[in-house]
Image 1 (tube, one colour):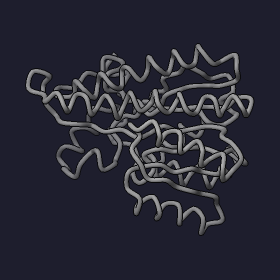
Image 2: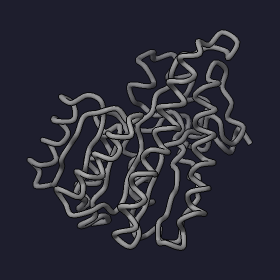
Image 3: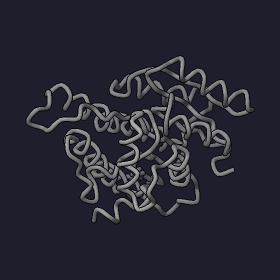
Image 4: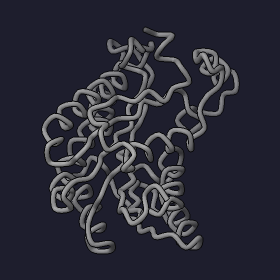
Length: 251
């Protein structure tokens, strides 16, 4: 069991990659602390885990709120005695528009959700990891904004995800000697609600990948699990492409 007895926060865990990660981490022995905006969906995921003899608690809230980030860490401490890692996965796509046509509020909302929330997560999680003598943080980035993966109409999203890689590497440099590893997974197109329901769009996105398909959420979760596990003990500051080869094509 890759994560046995580790306590892991998972944000964005009400659906998609986050829900797949919560279920996988729990199956691999972790105590999971679930966070997202939708309480009813969180309750369902936590219920599935607890009914399968896993350990899950949840808290609904907004990842852009410092108090919520701190409360997730507090919940991990209260229920499981501390924190060993976090998969900070919550994120949004935002409006598809050129920067010239983009509403300022969209830019700010995407940056707040995808990048500032990562700062808040790290700010609250790192002191808790220090108390444990180390641990691991994983962020969900994207091929968009990395490896020449610019896509039209995605200026805010690309900027936020590019910034997230920079934050990841800076945090890794700051805290490696303290036994805290910080990495990012960079998914390619993944079959989640963010991808929509347009079959033609799915075919187009799949065609961008050398693998000629989109990922399943569990495939991204498996990469995050590796980075959170002791198997990745010498991996830090890494933007790990989990993208069916799309980064190679775009280089």
